[in-house]
Amino acid sequence: MLKMTYREEKGGPLSWQEVDANFRVLENKIDSLKTAPQAVDVIQKIDVDGRTLKIWGRQGHLLAECEIPILTFKSRGQWKAKRSYIPGDIVSIGSRLCLCETPHESHTFQDESENWISLISQPEVKEKLP
Image (cartoon, rainbow, N blue to C red):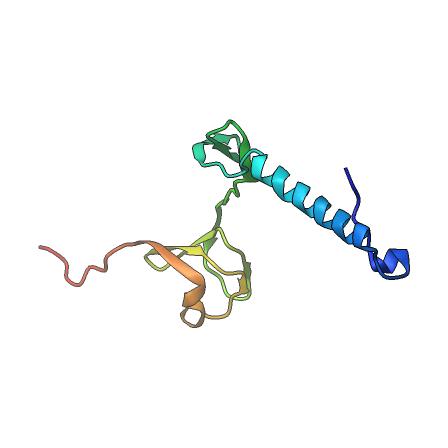
């Protein structure tokens, strides 16, 4: 394949033959792109192999693969002040079971409620039945 000639590398102006040769190189490259197989593919299937997600194309090519994150839950018992919590920690406070969503140092539950998702809440009984 022919190589492009650059003025900077040559150290002077290009001759008309060198300019024409550069155009031929570009024209050949464009023609080869027209006849090259298309790189575009569509998703044929998605597989999960252990913790790996694989996306396969219709032409049998592996289009993408990534590791699936695993969220692990950790029971921390009763909620306590002055304790570090991380996402996945589960605590009980009052009649609720809550999941930590944001890493933080606890102070008062009311001031940090945006860090928690309430999973289960036992309804309060207002009056006792006879």
